[in-house]
Amino acid sequence: MSTKYETMYILRPDLTDEIIDQTITRYQTLLAEQGAAPVETQHRGKRRLAYELKKFKEGIYVQMNYDAPTTAVAELEKAFRLSEEVIRFLTVREED
Image 1: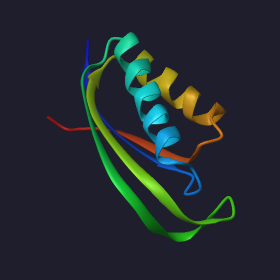
Image 2 (image 1 turned 90 degrees about the vertical axis):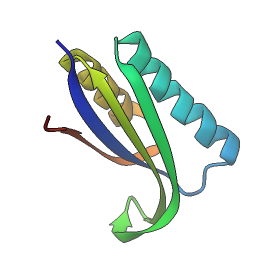
Image 3 (image 1 turned 90 degrees about the horizontal axis):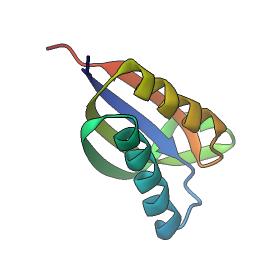
Image 4 (image 1 turned 60 degrees about the horizontal axis):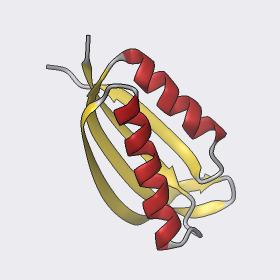
């Protein structure tokens, strides 16, 4: 059974545009492979953080909305934890 989720993650501000695009594509592909559909991604751009995270004062925000099984979310969050590009992430289940 699929559930609607929204994931917001913050990338390091020192990444190049090419690496940012590759990273976003990697996570979209990961979700698609895990059975998520459709994956809507919004690149929110570089913004100032409310407080310093891992010695960064800015971050590149990316938001994804998708329908997916719980296992897909677990795999995505595991990939976020292992990634050096992601400095913070949050996934919430959307109410119907």
